[in-house]
Each structure stands twice: as C-alpha cells, then as structure tokens.
Length: 299
Length: 299
Image 1: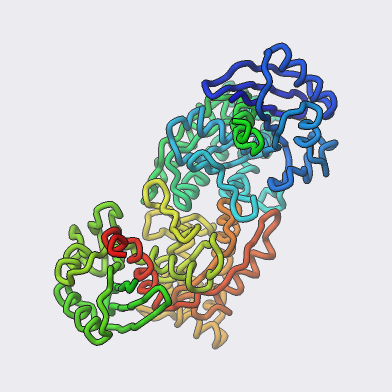
Image 2 (image 1 turned 90 degrees about the vertical axis):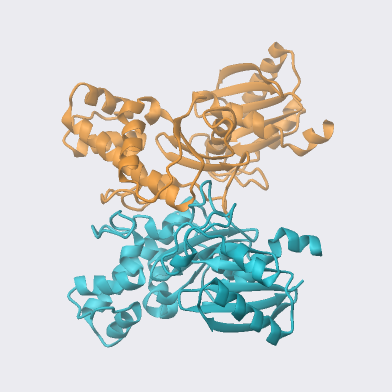
C-alpha cells in the first residue's frame, strides 16, 4: 500500500512516498499555506506517478489526536484552530491524518532508524527544544493526557536558570540549542546574538574555556536525565538525535560517559545516535498514514 | 475461581483467600521457613474450608520473573537462590508463582484500592525504601530489564546526602522512613537511635522546628518527583501509600500542594492516598494467582 508522509516544517516541507517495501520518492518544497501545500503535493505525486492510499501530515505544535484540530503552532500560526489534514484531504481526494511532528520523528527513528529491531525505545531529540518519546511495540506512549515524554522539563541541573516552561533548572536550560549559547555567555564566553549550539561547539574546538564549561554542564544534565529515565521507565534502547547531537563528541558521548560513571543500580541500555536526520518526520508520517482507517478498508 | 495470596513478610505473613466475587478469608501468621509456611497455609485453608486453584507468594527482594528464583532478599535470606513458590507448590499440591512484593501491593492498590476504576495508575509506596510502579491496564510496567519504577532513586533534592544506592540526593534520602529521622538530626533535631518517620511527625506536631524543616524538605523532594513523573510518563492517577504516608497532613498533602504550586505545563492527575494498608500485598498476590497457567487450565 502506497502512503505519503508530509513533514510540514516552518520554512521547508518534506514529502516522502513509501510502499510496504520502503521509500519510493522524496522531495523538499517551500512551506506555504494549505492551498499551496495541496498544489505542491499534487505536483510531487504527478512526478512520482503514484496515488497514495493515505497520507499523514506533521504538525509542529499542540494537536488534539481525536479531532485533528491544531491548538497552537508557533511556526505555522495559520493552522491554529484548523484541522489541516481534513482540508488537505479534500483537495487531494486522499484520506489523511495529522500527527505531532516529534511523535512522527520518534516513531520513525524507533522503527526504521537507530532503533530498528528494538521494541522498547526512548527517543530524545536535542533541538531548540528537547523532545522525548517512549516508543513501545511501534507506538508512542502519549500518557493519560497526551503529555508524556517531556524529558526537557525534568529538573536535571542545580542551576536556577528559568526555563521557557516557567520552571528552573530544566534539562532544556542546559542543552537546548539557543540555551546552550546563553550558558556559554553565562560562563563568560563571547556568544554573539543568535549564537547556536554549533557556535558553542566551534568555540570549544578552538579552545574556548567558557564554551567547554557550558558543554560540560550540558553533558552532565543530559547524563542525569538519562539516569532518571532509566530509573523510572527502564527502556531497552535510547536513541538521541537533533541538531545538538550533530557534534556527538561534544554532547552525547560525554553525557553517555558521565551516565555510565554515575550509574549505580541502573540498567543503562545501549544509547545510539539517530540515523534518519531531517527525514525522520516525513518517514514517521508515512508510517502513521498506514493507520488511517479509510485507507485500511481500501486494502 | 478461588485463589490464595500470601504476603511473606519479614516478621508476619499475611494470607488472603479470594474468589471472583471478592475476599473470602484472611489471617496473619508469624513468618517462618518454607516448611513452617506450608503448615500455616494448610491450617488456614482447613479453617476456611477451601482449596484454592492457585496461589501467589510475595518476595521482598529481587526475583527473576521467568524462573521464580529469588536473587537477594534482605529480610528472608533463606530464600536466596531458591524458587519458593515451587517448594510451596509441592507441599500444598496447588500451583503457584512468586511475585515481587511491591509489585503485588501496587497492583492491588491500582485495581482494588484507591486506583479502582483507573487503568493508568502510578503507585508510590513511602516506606523505609521508596517503591514506584506504573500500573496500566491492570499490569505493572516492569521496563526492559525489570528495573522500572525506581522513583526513590531519582535525584529530586539538591542535597549531597549519599543514598543506599550510591547516588547523592535521591528522593529516598529525604523521605525514606529512617532517612527522615537522619535528616531531622541533620537539622539539629534530637532524633534518638532508631527514630522513625512517626517520631519525626510527633516532634513536628509538638513544635520541633528541626522536625518541621526535615518534613518540609521531604515534601519538596516528593513534589519534585511527582512533577518529573508527570512530565515523563503522564499517569492518569497517582496513589501514595506506605508508613510515611500514614500522617498525610505532614507528608503527602504538603507535597501535593507544593507540586501544584510549582507545576507549569504539567498535567497533574488526581493524587490519592492508598486505601488497602498492610493488606495490599496479600490482595495483589491473590490477584496475581489468577495468572498461574495451570490454574487457568483448570477453569
């Protein structure tokens, strides 16, 4: 059965067509409104010479999984209060659903990326925000209120830095992309406006002590989070991806080493780097499309 | 189907006979070796005039769920390396299994106690040690290595007190039964040797500032743990029991209030006190006995 995954990002939208045997075609288009998206998708399908049985569309923001209505999307504000999959379904004539973007990416990494073969995988995305998802038996455990996986907002540092969520000392304040640059500055580093995690890593490579200290704090906070995840949910495998993981020797590797050194009773599972990169969301969406009810009845 | 739950404690053993309609009989006997236990159980069944189709026996310690062999039991050391349910099964002529004691108690609280009606319950036992168990759909989530639920060993305080597990600042160092008395002493309180959590509460009630401070620290640590459990796994209900919860106005209630005050994005579920008390283990064991394979085939 041919399925379409649409990763509807803030500036770029990624399209991936898969069959039960794997990927058929992919493309990246500029993000526009839903009408423009319908046209881009139509053109992509024409070029690929395929008609999918179903699609899934990622939403970067809050989403009611029962109704498909977007609560709040910071980067795609025109989606707020709409049911984008329903709109797109009408214009394409193909049934579809909306899925939360982090959930789609985690599902893909767990099933087709670094987690391949494991049926109990905790996926962590180290981006501007920090997302977590426990994927068991190919499904994301959303929790009783759809609020599970918020590893970025566990208190894993002793700092008093206020997080975007309003708490103090969250993991995200230590290792979130832009936060890492702020911590570099806190340590006396020369972080310019808009400095990124990559800038901190570049400075550390060049021997900047403040950058090294900020990255060390970040690794210690991530180590603490890994230990607490193992204590509480004991996953079979951990997969770590996202922009901040792109220089793993400065981020993920020291965190894993610190967690190993600090572990006592814990059963630390293998901890792997994500492998699907920026295509994880589209791949996961294509997978989620397999669950679209009317598509299943088409066989 | 009649089933027997045996809660094999360090000094007392609790026996409970249940049918599908509920409890039939209960008794408490002194704990002895497995031969004495077989005799006590035989006498109990004779008095009750019942022959159970199966039993389950709790083990206070580590247990391989696949083989039923006890790894290490601190209070019942004669069980180490044995398969106690197998031994008891031979002497009673009834099939049985061993279950971890905390797991049995959590299962009972989730299904028949304060969690009744909920299918996603996180149960916390505040005793000398702190145990946690996430019970979903009537089953305890053990994790990939049987090591899940260790809420007592998440770092939820900023203190440097070394925990029995080897880490620093674990929840258990703040609120574990005997640890609470140690913290009272750290605050300058007159805790005698062997002082218990109840002694700390009594002192606080009498206006002892050091006892109040220790209990306040304990409540703050428990609040932090509750927030981190909600962030990571988002349960539908939390149930808190154990000896330290017996004076909830000094322990659980201030922790719940502090969690409520500190919550930001969290979806705090209802937080209830456990209702089965010291019989939770026996009730949960009787429930676990329903899953004994040869018992099921007997119909």
